Length: 124
Image (cartoon, rainbow, N blue to C red; front, top):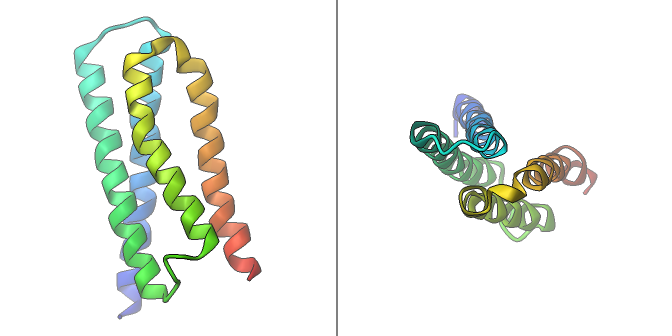
């Protein structure tokens, strides 16, 4: 596979991460403000959903291109985090009282996911 394909996948993956956190940030800010703005909910949900899809597709492409096993422990942790981030939108939209706790929880999940790539993956 040409090197530029992996670079494109990396850009798409990071774009997905940015979109996910932007979307959830908008939805959480909406909840914290006590607003029931339908346009903000729609934009935040669409942005985070597209971001999750980009993360999954580009991430799987990078895993395949790099020859890593999908059963590597650091990848399993990242997949569990992806599932958790995918499900948290339900809590954001249905339990606005949890917005502050979710804000910090989502940040924590992002930090753990980054640590899996930048620390754990390169250790072994």
